[in-house]
Length: 247
Image (cartoon, rainbow, N blue to C red; front, side, top):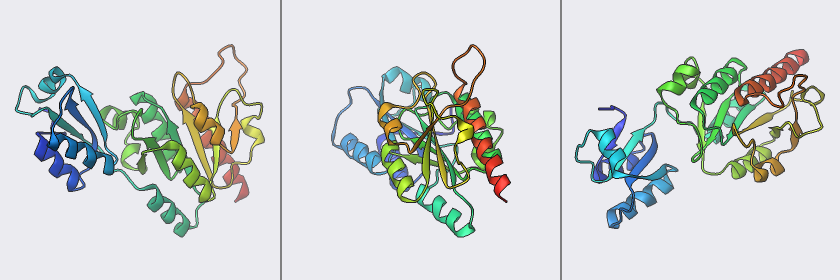
């Protein structure tokens, strides 16, 4: 049985209440009751994703153990608080560099972005509570262990997080092929948060509107766009190049 699972209503509630790092809580579809209501409220307060799933999935995960219709998957890493990360960056005197993922759901892309971000000296990855790739063993393997090194911050709202980053003095930079401004025309030496969109639809319209700058990577081939992990690497190392030039 998977050692990263906790099952049973009260054991899961106790784990959440104790602050254990949990990726998501799965509840049998259609389940109701006072305790389940308390569990849902607890998960909401702790920003833990709740999924309703068929009972067959819970039976398969627990090998038919007595799960009471509730199974929690613990996180493979310890999530960080974005405010604490930025405070530490300020104290160090470094220039903040953050990568925000808006709907990146492929584990391999997520791992590859984490690897590039860590190699580029980025200070954090920001991922949404919902519609995000799981931080699991496959993601860690693809990242070559980078997910154990770079802080990963899980947030309830990407839009609220962008507002917070802007208030903290970071310029939010969206990667989109629809922009007329090319990557190499932008100043990326200052405090920067790169925003990368999902593999199929890109950055959501609401998030894109909020970004301070929209940049396109110049392409000369027939294919119209790069894979999101490749695009993230290009942006990150252009920022590295510019920052090295200023030293």
